[in-house]
Amino acid sequence: LRVVPPAEVPAAVATGGCDLGLVDGPAAPSDPLRLPDVAPLTVTGVDEEEVAVLLPAGHPFAGRASLRLDDLVDARWLDAPGLCTPPMNSARAASLRYDGTDLHGLCALATAGHGLVLLPRRVAEAAGSGVAVPLSAPRLVHRTELLTPGTPTGAAAALAGRLRAGSPV
Image (cartoon, rainbow, N blue to C red; front, side, top):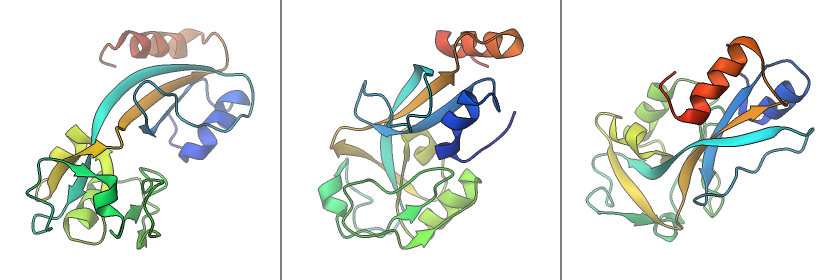
């Protein structure tokens, strides 16, 4: 098991550096993720989940039932390329870049008021002292996709089969 930057996963799978790969990120419901075209890969959607914006408890929007991305046009966002990136429609550049892969650390930065993050709803709701507010428009989901170079074998085939079936790993 290797953790590589998300943008490098397709190339790692295509070149044989990894037997299979998982990528995730925001997408319109049922739309595939936008991946670099590095080689023919089999891409299978394995999960889609509603997204939420993680806000500090005292944020003016923390009491809302949902948010539209337009509500957050002037918001400060955290850019965490290893975990999540600011929504494409946000007008302002990220105020803080987090190059780590620790999701708890990213959530701690958001709940402390250093910037907002768009996360799978269950992750945002588990963040502790922050408030998870679902994003209502545009309609986005957090999508996870399995990348394979063809037909995996051995342990990779077993794992791919479980992921495709939605079984716990």
